[in-house]
Length: 268
Image (cartoon, rainbow, N blue to C red; front, top):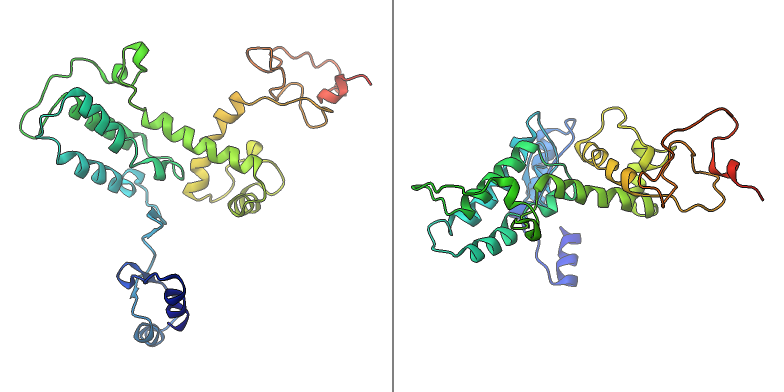
């Protein structure tokens, strides 16, 4: 309490004890817990439900774990359901609500496909003016609404694709910024002897690592080596030919087992 008081006086911020939680090891007795609580009036839980707004533990149903995202979006749109908004107004609201609220969570976790589809159905219903009491006809299917404008769409984001893109940005950060704390933590636990682009899922991974694993493929597909000495570039497996549409050798002829790296093809 003294340390928290010093912090509050130094920064001018007050600790909200109602939003704080305290957990203990199972080996701690109830008397010891009570003694802590008497000095530090923070509610005691068996586990921390959320940290920085993100769930800390997951059950079998990921859709249920992330259902609060759907609730937040629904509450935002519900107040506008009965309003007479133009199509332009609905489009602005959709982009400002349904495609912004999940962004923070999408940068850390892969949301279930079922949840993304539910949110997109809500978007479509809101766009065509459906309410709780009256359903409107959807004159165009969902796939058209989520296309670019020059293709006849409304530029609504496909949540699944956007989710993969956000996680792929994390993969690239782990690949390029090796000295960050989060990159060091993941590397030491899941791929200590290799690069993240070559990492396996491993044993007993948490959901954050599972999510990142699902976003490695866009980086592998779209990135290309810049050839220097060619020591680390595999001829047959890596992307290293930027002028070719596939970026790699498609029909390898492995007649010589000693030629595996690009450096083996370079003559001084």
